Image (cartoon, rainbow, N blue to C red; front, side, top):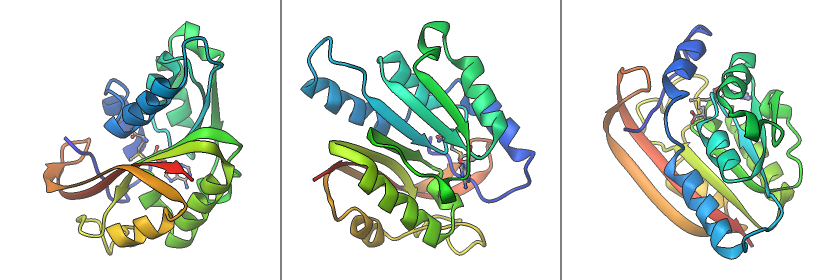
Length: 208
Ligand SMILES: C[S@@+](CC[C@H](N)C(=O)[O-])C[C@H]1O[C@@H](n2cnc3c(N)ncnc32)[C@H](O)[C@@H]1O
């Protein structure tokens, strides 16, 4: 079931991380990882992913389990704590957790950038600036895997939430080949069980 949220008090996040820490990675992250695996032979050096707004790290831990190096970034220290606590010992040396605001985060050169239900929490200016920095940071053939709030989401128009139209998202990804695009719109629930009309854009795109 898709997960969405509106801005709520800070105590929201520990509850969110407790619920999501055991959940599987999003399909977009798995899709992107499998596309890299199909091109990389066995024994290829580990690739680097940056998880933007990692939360409890469902995507980060999936990539770590596949041998990736991961830089996991979140504004909340409790997110990084939850991710590190849930990361198996054998994967920890390939994980770097970072408490930082995406609004000012300089994305390092990487193979994959993930943003799973996180960019909507930025202002539109910061959202587009983050994607510009991702585009500049991706190595040739690098990918962006995103779960992005669409403009028919129930949160659209709420203060502090940025929900872009599919056309606007495609515009921001003009320097990419779209490899997978799926729009999910339904009456669902948030991770914490509240009813929510969800409009999510699930995209995997390869930097040209
Ligand atoms: C809905 S959660 C999604 C977490 C994770 N990607 C997942 O799919 O489970 C959004 C995350 O974005 C983080 N976040 C929100 N604004 C942020 C910002 N300005 N900089 C960094 N992280 C931010 C929140 O702390 C939260 O962990």
